[in-house]
Amino acid sequence: PVFDRTLHETHVWLGAVADALGDPRPEMAYHALRGVLFALRDRLPPDEVFDLSAQLPLLIRGVFFEGYRPAGKPVKYGRDRFLERVQDELQAIGGGNPERTTQAVLSVLARRVATGEIEDLRMSLPKPLRTLWPEEAPSPAEEAAPRPRAAKDTRRTDDDAIDEAGRESFPASDAPAW
Image (cartoon, rainbow, N blue to C red):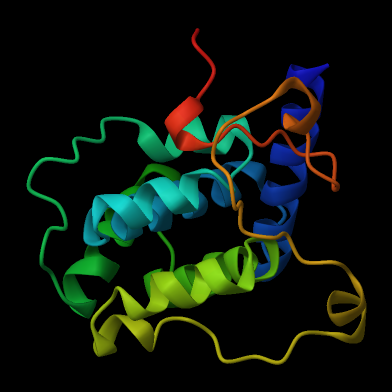
C-alpha cells in the first residue's frame, strides 16, 4: 500500500508540474521537477533540505536526495547559476525556459508544502533567488483545500506513517530502511 500511495502521489505531483508548465509530457514534468529540486537542494542549508524532504512523496524524496552530499552545503550561487542548473537538467528533454520552469515547479511546491516551510525555504535563499518564487494568489479551490502541516514531532509511529491527505510521512530523520 505504501508503494501504491507514493506512486499515486508522485503522479499527482508530476501532473501538477505538467499543468503549471502547460506541457503534458510526463518526461518534461519529471526533468523540470528534478532540475529545480536539485538546484534548490544544493543552495539550501542541510537542515532546510531535510525539513523540505519530510514533506515530499517518498519517490520524489528519493529523487531529491539522489547524489546529495550535505558537506559543504549550501553552495553559494546566484540566480543565473541556479537557472543554468535547471537548464542543464532540461537539456535531457530537449531544453526549455529555465525561469518559467523554475517558477512553475516552485508554484507546485508552494501549493503542496506547508506554508511555514515554504516561508523558511524562501528566507534561506538570497533575495535574487527569492524572486523566482511566484507571488500568485491561490485559487479559491486551493484556499479551501487543507494545506499540509509542518511536522511537530519527527519520530514516526505506525499510526502517523500516513498523513491526513494520504501521503506517507516518513521524516527525513526516520526514513524507511530499504
